Image (cartoon, rainbow, N blue to C red; front, top):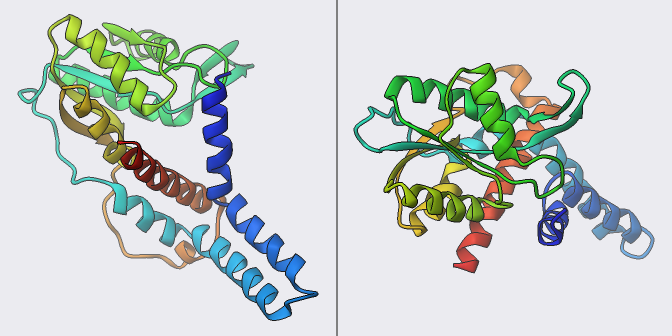
Length: 248
């Protein structure tokens, strides 16, 4: 396991829900004896924040704020397809070992559909920052075995989106590829696209996970686990964008 990856994610956990709100509420509880008003305020903010971030209505708006405008590739804009990993499942019983996670599966499904439609070669990218088999290898095997799509390049050293871009660009440029379709979830593309462009590639965003806008329903204002998870994803990407800009 990479120490830098572990440290980065450990720090991020304190900035993201639900831990950030639980810490705020805990400080409020400890403040009740000496500064009762402040303690009540902090507890109220913690509970209200947890409620709001767990509602599908708020979560959807946070994710949609990150998504770039949708565009359907035509096949003329680029020469290869690059698909980014989004997590793995480890030691699965039903598959007899490591396999791609849900987010990764959604991405490679769209990449497979796009590869057939556009007849472009595929590159998969993702390492193993928290152990197990590298994502790139799992993605390549799943695409070929379950989707019947040939993978031309497998990048399996990267631990971050920035390294995805760096190591993928090395492989692509060796074969004279400089224009790519970049496949990831739409909310991830604002952070991913600039990283690949920094490596001298021309990037056409090819996002998945778009949905048509609809009016809110009553259930959208009730907290749910999915709502909190979607808010977590949105805030994770927002923090990532800020961090990458600071480093740049």
